[in-house]
Length: 311
Image (cartoon, rainbow, N blue to C red; front, side, top):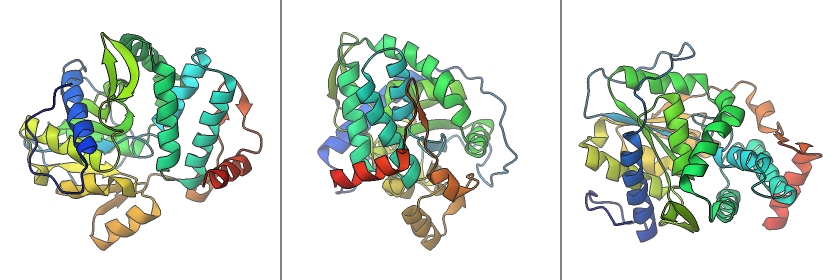
């Protein structure tokens, strides 16, 4: 994929691979947004956001996906759906289940586990057609993701849409799956990790690196430049301290269901915070059932033991 030429000056911390991943994701997002329907479902919940400003066409909103818009990690739910369709074996599903269990226990993204999940997903989809995965993604959304959308965050996104602004998901999940979720929520489009494909078939490689941390900021910067947006008038929403580069890029950063590090960082800078979780401590130790396998026996202990062994 050819590099795009419309990046504004960036921070030195971004690596060349982060820039490439950001540019590739922005290009894919702009293409996919042309295919997403404009109609959105009615907002849920009773949250009254203080922002956005109606009619500001130089502003847009950027939403992290995992644990910000949706409970849990999209890549794990996608893996469960692929297992159900016999894309891989039970031992690999157990690995997905343990990773999801750790995500739920910790309440934050673990880059090591997320990288493992992405590597697994790339090996699984290698040789499959992009169109096939898009179609399956629609089914998996209904099966595992639709009921996990946070109503409060959904209402915030709808407020931006109602104000006439574009709303983009920004996630490390594959851009095809992120695009499906954006479409189903009635959003503008999605920035996500771009997997290389030739002739519409996945090669098992990435373009650049996963859209995580600084790469997200690069993707937002690139898309804003292409869309003629002013970042100082834009908003960004995330639960994770890993997304501080993206949140720091805009004039209206929000910490949604924040992890401890982001909560502290946001409070020090007087950023807006929203927490839509109830029984937060209980939620952190809930262990999901693995599709086709049932509950993960001793899931909490197994996830913690696995994490410690990997360290």
